[in-house]
Image 1: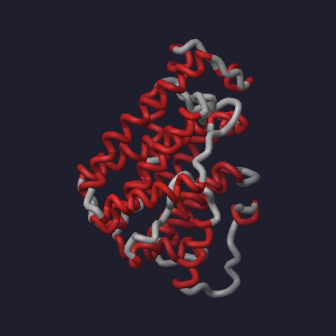
Image 2: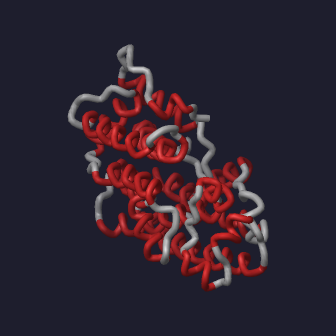
Amino acid sequence: MTTRNDLRRWPVERPTTLQEAYAWCERYARRHDENFTVVSSLLPKKLRRHFFAVYSFSRYTDDLGDEAEGDKLALLDAWEQDLLEATTGNPHRPLLIALSKTIEQCEIPLDPFLRLIEANRIDQRISRFTTYSDLIKYCTYSATPVGQMVLAVLGYRDEERIALSDQTCIGLQLANFWQDVSVDVDKGRIYIPQEDLERFGCDDQQIIDRRFNDRYRELMQFQVTRARALFSEGKKLEARVSRSVRTDIRLFRLGGEAILNAIEAGGYDTLSTRPRVTKATKIRLALNSSARIALGI
């Protein structure tokens, strides 16, 4: 669990080697319970540290926007400045020492990192989305940049792969939103588009009161179907990447689909409880995916 002090700064009194910095990122990444496997044992060893660095940046930025005490906008501004200084040769924190090297070696543009920080600024200003289009626009800050970072680490920068990655990343973001309705409302946020709430006869107060009924069930069933369509399109990316990294790319999608399966298994009630993807499910998905890759399926 990330502590409040972790969210403010890391100790920088002693020098940190590059190896120690990457080790820090791996420890940080493994502390978080995600719906998908962050880095599988099948990922080429030379890429693992880059995956951990990119993931740690993404996770830390979200933690800063969600959990840190004090003026979150000021903290995010300072974090952005730290990032810019790190990429111009002056990194101080372990994460940024590792990340700046990953950015340099993998030739990752800064834009995805800056957009992710901006997503967390948006979270401080906006707690509702009028239309589905508004929500998708937000996802171009909160979700698609992560996939673009990963593709750059893998050496892919073409528009076709990026477009397919965007579909999977948006699907993952939506799946997380539908999973976390009961969690987000405690933070004052409702990500279900207002137009969809109205269409199905629901409203903000029902979400706040956690009143589950048939109207909400139909609303959530609609949202789950919508996310599945995104995963179906994004799945095409898996055949367009090297077999050596296909398991990890596939596991992102499978993790998202597992969230949707858990929502369905719970009768679409994401108000009373938060559906979870069990560790056993994640292990099964990883083993099945690895087997399919080995068999060329």
